[in-house]
Image (cartoon, rainbow, N blue to C red):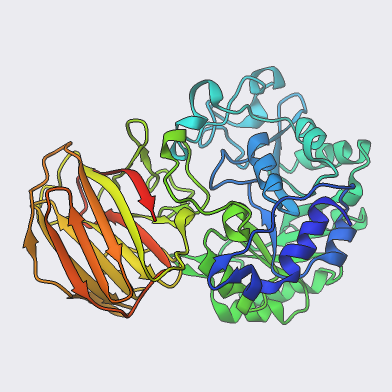
Amino acid sequence: MGGAAALGAVAGGVGVGALLRNGEAQPTGPTTGARVSYQAWRQSRTAPYFIGHRGAGDVAPEHTLPSYQMGNDWGAPAIEISVVRSADGVVYCLHDLTLDRTTTGSGPARGKASSDLDNVRVSVPRLGPRWVGVKVPVLPRLTDVLTALGGRAVLCLEAKDDDAYPLMTEIIEERGLQDTVMIKLPGTAVARLEIAKAAGYPIYAYLGNDEVATAAGIDQLAKVLDPNMDALVLPAQSGPNLFPSNLIRRAVGTGVPVWVVPVHRRYELQHFASLGVQGMVSPDVGYLSGSEPKLAADAWAKGAISAGERTLDPFSDKYGLHWEERGAIGLDVPGRAAFVTLGQFCPISANSYRLEFDAAFDPLPIDTWQHLSVAFGHADDRYYEHRAANSNGYHALVRADGQMAIYAHLQGDPNGKALTATRQSTPFEAGSWTRLTLDVTPATIRLTRDDGSFVEAQDARFRGGYFHIGRSGTDGKLKIRNLQVS
């Protein structure tokens, strides 16, 4: 057993309890070795195992060679790849049929000659300035990706343009890579599914939304899949919520291996694994698997989002981080609160620790009662937002007018409970930075500003875990820099 196949056995073989020991991902690390085949991976893997979604699409520009390589370097046993074709029949890696969303080009890829597409680059500015300018990766040809990754990982290949399917399989077969490939298809594409199965390919069959991922849809798809070869893939989300547990259990009950996509957070991994899901199709395998180590200080000066750093929707430009002056990020979602989960530092295992960072509002929120918050002491990494009432923990805040306080919040109760009296500190001025220090001991919580003001609470209910930083208001940009945990 070699390469990613070996990782499938190691990462899956320990089980989710060990992989997330005490809530913390245990490093698995990338492996190297002999050629990877689908059958070797299938026979050795033990749930939960990982498939790199769009490569490492939470951290690097999706469907690019750097993204695919990053997922593989993290130790992903399999990588999910989407392709389209050019007007002259060259196959490129791209999620959409059009170039507009993720590239420097525009219009349908099918309408462009390969000489034009070779000059197109994949641009995802929300991932940071590391991925803009001259560093923007090219739109890759499938042949280049196969040269780099063929035989190093199982490749789950989907032709988004149906006319690209025969070209895609021709390239695979010319290179003798049939035994390393799964064919990814919508579960409703019955004719194409039959063609792929007749050719002997294992199938990654997905039901991509609530309209088709019904009880009847799951039952119908399971009947045409081979439990020893194929995978039945369901969405991880249903609107703002996780996909219904009863439908996950129904799919698991068919005996076909069930995968979910996309899995961004560790609490999602734990939840789905507990329901019997085997495959986690994730755009951040480094964070979920623990092969990317925790940080003690932010890496924003490198100009790239870190593994585990999560906004409300990691694939959305609307909720994406704003990259400010070197080493600073901004949170500014028009019309709603904005928080970021700092999973790259977590979980914090100690009962005593210090968290410190610089913060500024620029511009200030119109309502100066609105505040920046540090939410902490959370048992898992689900997204926190003020008054969302989806977790237990604390939030320490400083309002734009300078008032400071510490609160506890409980799941199911949108009203926090004040643990301190409010104390006045220096009001924020637009663009002016202030240093905040949060000290947590087994019995106390203390928030201090660099003007000497502080508030302190005596409360020992929640310790360690995950933390988030954000703004409570619907306007004004919160900026953060120089974040350290000790």
